[in-house]
Length: 453
Image 1 (cartoon, rainbow, N blue to C red):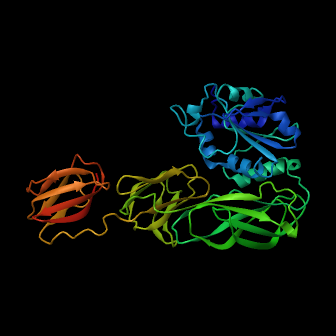
Image 2 (cartoon, one colour):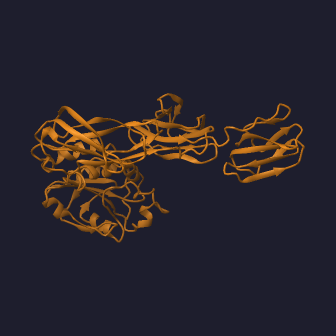
Image 3 (cartoon, rainbow, N blue to C red):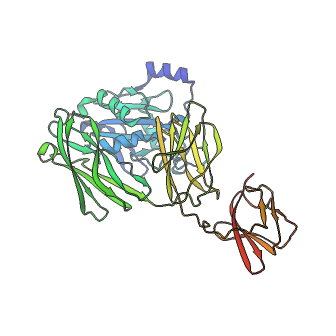
């Protein structure tokens, strides 16, 4: 079942005819859990239903923003428990394979999704039958007996603001209540970081003026407390830095206690896991990398080192843009105004350091470079000349030598030759970075080379 309309007709139809029929549905998600719309509404929750399809490009772009997941995490059963966000694939052919990105799908709808997913076994079409929806994606916000359509918004906080203002009765906790919002983890060089958390005032009628934030290490030991003071109005958030250097990888946890000097009577959402990932496991090789960003000159990007310095920059549409990186260094690719654009970073050995789809006004992707395995190579003597580097199909090795060996970065020999004609055919070797060994009597000289076409 594909609902395909022009953008103009969809907008007109949404305005006039998009509606919930007023009948309640019960459906099972992909994990076999049952979801009853009436039960959630009777509990006073607002329910946000995403009518989507696995073949729909805009649906996948919305999924990639993870706005629904963040709302469900912060305000669903694991958060303040005031909301249920539910994703539905309403195509009759929905299956787990398609939701995982199989042929015919826009991509993987499962990875990173924190809210229930309804689709396979006709469960998505069952839900869809309770709505008069002209196209996908469509968001319905259930609040009591009303279910208006609300705009798709990739920014999760803007989407939450719409949800809250459209259904204030679901967010009406009276009294002092502080929570922590979803933490997106720390990735970078192991020089150490101070953890930042987002503190949220979940009260509907009381300003938050003080709170204590506890930080525990992966062994659950309390390692730091931060006494926050300020004036945070209801349903507002602020960023708090915990004054403690974290330099060891692992899963930490932060917890907010003693809001306004009192015991928090609603502890939902008070604790957040913080994933700290250090190390050099993205770029295997500290050689020139290729940066690819789709789009046009309305999208810009910057390659920044761990000190914040800009190593390279460009615009959308860059294909195989070369940039040099150093060993034992961490980098961030910052993409501005690239919402929905694809990007990839390929190292000198043709390994993918990072890739994905940019979301939001500013998107960051971190990667790091390992120790160059060949950074202490013995210099080739002056009477032997190797050119061009990089090479394409032919490599010239001029001078007096006995044999040459070319190996990849894992040590596998890809070419051996004792031909001293000086011109070596490397057309059968894949693009990448290699080790050239030149054997002269009882000596072996080594040089890092690149093959690019």
